[in-house]
Length: 347
Image 1 (cartoon, rainbow, N blue to C red):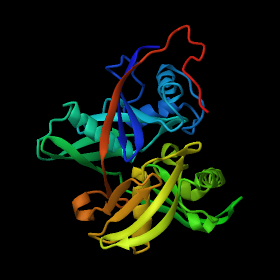
Image 2: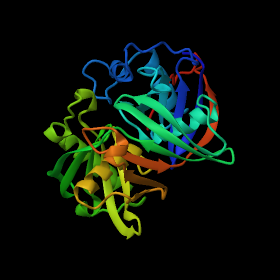
Image 3: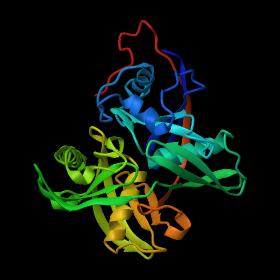
């Protein structure tokens, strides 16, 4: 196990641990694109949450598991891009494996790229960082003022609705679930339909509902993506509640339960894109309107639709999500060969 240097950020409360794979001396992941490298990391027949082996996954487990990480840790390996059109690529990871999209991570990577000088940026103004992720090419527009990063706007791959009002039986009652794809597949359900509110006190019930809904939708055709199995299958379940509209548009609070019961501390970046697609189809979000999207921790993302003529993309709605990412530290992790815990454990 090599010594591994990381640079850590949080975006709206959700951690993101960054590892430059080449600088860390990690072996290159086979594949010509980031999507192919992600499929290699997951392994044959993998779903993104199955146990894996190999040098890269040893490092993931070292960084995400206790005592160096925790069950809520998230991060990414910076890898080469698909081509010269992007600044770099990234393989997103969490406690259970790998993911195809991560909005909060994309925002953190944009701030990191500017902070480290990897992408030149003005003292005042904006600069766009282009990043290849397993679901496609995304952008992180870094906003600067007085030599400091003041925010980041994430432009996602096109989002589309997969299914509406899918009945799902849970131990808390029957839920009507909406499915949308936005780099990953998200199932949305109103928390009140299950007798829940979106609060810290309700987290055990929200977590249980999220796990049950994800399992129930495992074979639903609405979770299938035309891009193939890598992008198919429910990644996250968004349990949301309505709040009074702002003068600029809808206002919601959510808890996103993703992977095998991991809770997003942020309002979920790519999940916000999925919510935008559903709100647009319902006629609740139009041009020039914003979704004010809160997390259970009280942090906020602001989401909006990008006009199609400005987006230059087909096959779905292009969305943007704005938040703030902050550097939290730099770490040099090692593994003592005499340490009986090895890469660690999860509780």
